[in-house]
Length: 195
Length: 250
Image (cartoon, rainbow over all chains, first blue to last red; front, side):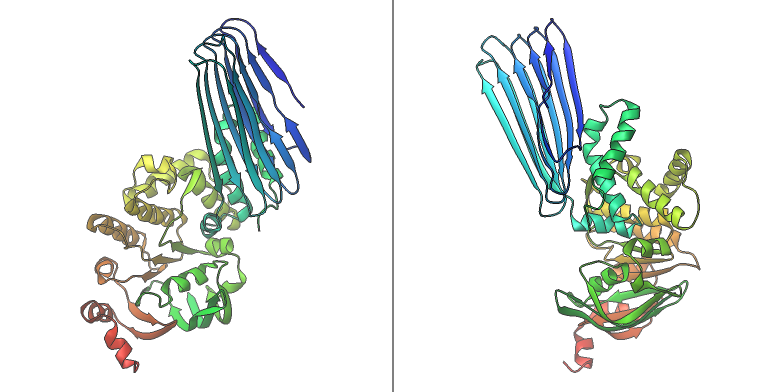
């Protein structure tokens, strides 16, 4: 599935927020084309994979207008034997003076049989562009879970707490009602993934 | 309250505890001392049900219940608390959310309804004062970026929130400066009631100046080799453990 948004006019703004828990195999790259000068685009994503799911998701930010800015925040959570990839392109064309991009890709692993991958593509044709990419990978440790257990929190609830804390940055971008749904969805998607 | 009989436990097939007998009554404070590697931390881990350790023999009853049958979270609900020697960091999970989950799980177990947000925050404020814990710390992620002293204080804060029947303090004094030690120890004393008991695991007499033990045990090579009153801790402070090893004929 691929959707594209087009920032045509001057000072236009576009924001994608996705919570991806879906199908067996997902390829999904909601994209933004920043044609209008001074336009701004954002992409916020949480992708959860469990069992044998494969998700390969991310975005394209295509900077064409001048002074265009984009932000990418992607949080991947892998459990079971799943594979979770972030794949994203940031393109800055020749005329896109002073384009600015910041990308942050975090991966959280549950268990030892899942995988997380990050493929940031950058295609920069203008010297004035400033493009940043940050990536982290972390794991929920046995010690963290046991600490929660000792305080009376079951392993399943502990995973929910940690995952929701981790995805907070993206979930906070969602409208209230939807954020509550998303939190529950995360917990359901990861049910039975630990212990 | 706690009755440990001939407890044997091992990790990765290596036996660490070789027959522990321990009996703790309501309201008592027991200190457990012993050289490094004698099994002190293993004992506390086994009591709270750490999955890395396997109990191979013996029994533990807590308040009339078979403790070894219970899951770690149910042991917590039953009133057992461990102040960890090395509290772990949980990034992204705020202390408020963490404690709220813990307190409400316990209430659920006791058949009580969950606290409302305002009731809960009031309880947090009250208990924070016990260990002079800063409000800022309560809003940060669990133990993340806390100093050694703050982590230990945070453990006692959690103990205050959960009001356990039996608390195990595993080297709560290690890594604390003298002021932090005093605050932590006073916190523990404030929480002490005639209904609650405490196991204090420590290397040094220093902590026991503040938290007065009723009984002092020496753990050595997986067994309790000596049990006496508080004077034993003072003697160990002066003479070390060698004389006890000699008594054992080593």
